[in-house]
Image (cartoon, rainbow, N blue to C red; front, side):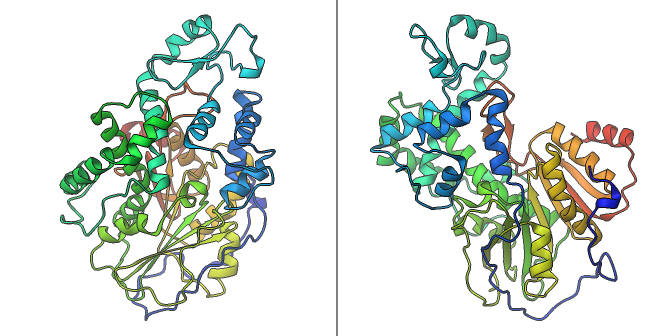
Length: 460
């Protein structure tokens, strides 16, 4: 945590919480996709951290992808062409290479190149998701692995089924909501509302040639239809979790989406998870959540925004009933000074950070500090999401230390239902994207550490 004397100061508006007023239509300038000042990349930090638990794992991944460095890997993610000839001759090779990146002993962390000729890595027959170099390691690891084996079985299926999202063979059900927004309080009611449409969609995917090709390519028995449908539903929640979480934040914080000129949401710290495979239609569900809205502009801001993400290049007004996506590659406090304070972009009605991670790394905390103070000082309605109860408690404490006024926190009703495995520590309990949320507005939180811990344990 940086001392107060080092905290960056921002010009503050005369009132930290401005009254909500009706404004005339405003031209929303296109948000340039440019890199302003360099900042820490959470994607790069995550890739480098693989070495902490499994030395040599990051190099194994690069080798299987026919790449020489993380920079080349990031170039491909940004839509560039690597110099080493990245690519696969067929789907079978692609899936095999992908599976090879998971091949290390979950107990002793041995990689294939570190094994003698008499040993070979074999996966757990129950979950098909972790590997062992021999019976001894598997037996020793079983007390730990047995706690997560069933969940990791779901992870293994979802990892393959996700390919159907990449190719576009699994198209999410969409269209105006037939139920009132107030009725749809979480996934149970959302699935009930979309039931008939979802059933038809999943039946079509199960009967498709793409599904047949997928399981033929991985050279693995095709699971039962109920297993595949369960995977499709989890993948659907993973894609729609972000737009519906934005909607949950707008609704919970009482943001007026019916104001003239439309409403603006900033997603700060946006990375590849929010931008790489996102299509314009993925956020239509946010619009359907608020029938009669006068336009929603979602701006992704972060140093890891995918280079080809910018979805909107038009300087026209937000059209009522439409959701517009755009992006800015850089740090949020720089974006604020360059775009917001100069009047080029409208002030946000809501700011959201998906898994900011500032609790986990001093470097990330140092980078996030100016943004957190800016949001606090300007009284911007803000929501962040975290993966786990532990992250929730740690993030809450940091925000309390920064004197933010925490207005709400708890379990997210639109959390992803897709379990996420810790890549380099496969037997760690899987987590779920945006499992918990924190909302804050302005300053003057009065909870001390003991009161905070008691409230977290009571609420979750």
